[in-house]
Image (cartoon, rainbow, N blue to C red; front, side):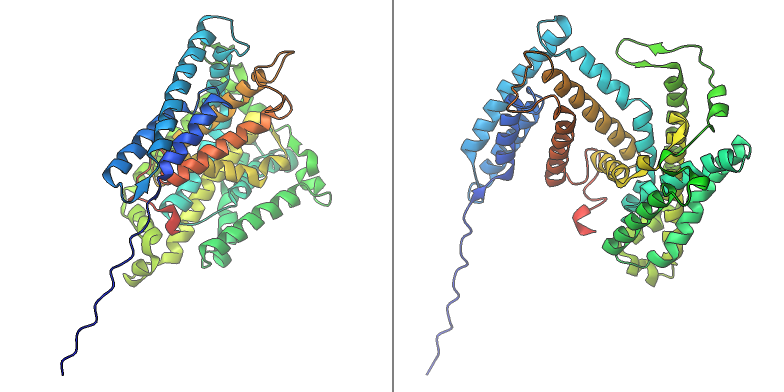
Length: 427
């Protein structure tokens, strides 16, 4: 008696699902015609084109052709609206929003001292996270010890200014050694908790009443930046029409971008050396690197120190450009903003922190100026049921956060990053 082989059941056919880029194009198209006056509309049209192409290639897997078509139409209308806004804003005074002032404000911030601070901090995070895979959420702590290293040395210990600079660069090294020995063997999420806790402990210690004689308490320290300002070679402000800096900011911009350029050149050289290739290998698979006889802990410590020094350099520059050191300036927000700049530009890219910091501050300042003008005056451009003038300064962070979310969904490697170089979801 022969047995009949059991017939295999055919796998169930997966139902087609709406293409995510079609939904994204629709959302961006609606946003372009309502909240942001067409700013997101070109992206809506772009995402709609990508969705239509994907649906055409795989009709059994994706649907949503109608959503994509609507998103494309809204994107085209919003793009036309954006062009009209720009032409009228630059050529006439017919609009309640001065578009020229919006772009000038955005460029001032994108090229100004604030962008430099976050570019330096993001360079350090790029070494930690982008190249080595260390999830450091305490970069604000490295910035704080760098700033207080200068201020305490000059104001409290009364040392010369140049010795204060040395102390500001040595302090992050000491912090990295103290922090690294007990934490670098932790998993990524536990390392993040340990570093963010360390940064908060330092901030609270610097602002505590008990240590006021040493760190100035919540009011901080001043009176250490006169030597830095005396080196200013400029005799007046700079006004190029599209960008404007005061005499003091012009000196800080010159010093700051020089530091950024030298830092990027150093990172470029290190990451193309055998040492940098070991860091990349540790990021991908530290067990494999350990099996080859490399001291993974030592390399992680070196990366933590180097990235911390760049963080201390960012804190030092922040202290010099504003001539005061206040504990509130080194909260966890500064770490998250530096990460935002890094992710926008692209982690594990030499120029990623620079591009991300410039784009981040261009968006923050430009959106803040636009929403501020659009919600002010007796007859504001935006109705009060959408937002009022007290909400304008906060909505810019909401819009930037929405943009970052979409970037992480559709291009997690950042604008200039390479998906093959780093996978954020694989951390």
